[in-house]
Length: 172
Image (tube, rainbow, N blue to C red):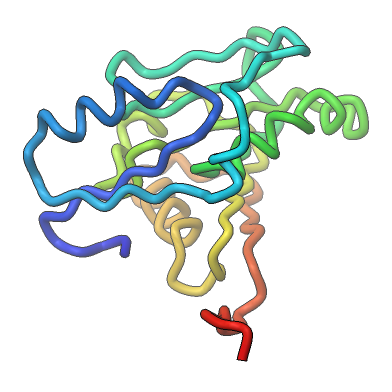
């Protein structure tokens, strides 16, 4: 669904209340595809038990940034949708296990990518893009290319994605 001309693609997450995002999409009055995870239907809004710092760019379709404190991260994890919630739920444990400062960037607007939100951030030396789809021709490759084109590439860039297998649509 990404890359279709003149189609806005957004993904919601239970990290923030999505009512403003939905209102913004309706106000834009343009063809929009909203990606949502069925897992998110049963989740309540994120409660932040580890007192992480959660901020969103100053508009309702802006990227969400989650980290444990100030300063430049060692590792930046970029993802979208409900998988961002899974990463945030493990963020404190990941920092403890790696002894590294980790920051999550959750993209709300997937197409067109608002590259300014990425270029204006202090990204870690290791950038990991986590996506639920396969990595070939995916969002991670596009993010890597955009960062490299804008001379914002890191020393190490990794993609975590699903294996390239068809997803069955029925039980047969």
